[in-house]
Image (cartoon, rainbow, N blue to C red; front, side):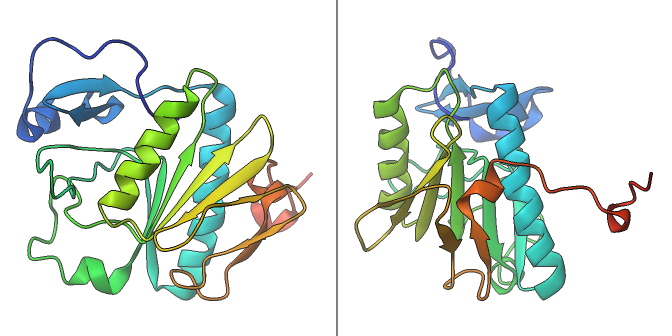
Length: 200
């Protein structure tokens, strides 16, 4: 749910100006140009399911923090003014605690896990380019979710990518020890129970 939705704007912006825009959370910043993020009902739902399942783990263990796409990452060594907004990110809390500034406008460190959800308007080679951009910046783990095929492609920093299908189980031991989830569960909402506050 990322990448170019239209041609970049002709005016250039700084990251500080992006922060001040009333709708700035809808844009990334590449080469000084605003790049609007693609969205769709399906990809937004999948994004929410990733965030839901990661947040459940975070609340139970207390060792990671989970962020939505509204958080911009300004952590690209070769392009210090670039701002990207992965759809869901996970960062270990001790790394956040070590930040010199407690509440930076953009996250200055790479996430421990980044998730990109492919939207119908995304172009395959642009998704791949963005993944390579993340890996070049040192993102240790990138997951690309494909709602149409109900698959997740896992891109480790130091290994080859692997495709996981609906019946496979995903783990992220280096980031979230003990976390396990079937791929299919990222593409379907959990069943409501009385504990969910939805009594009938």
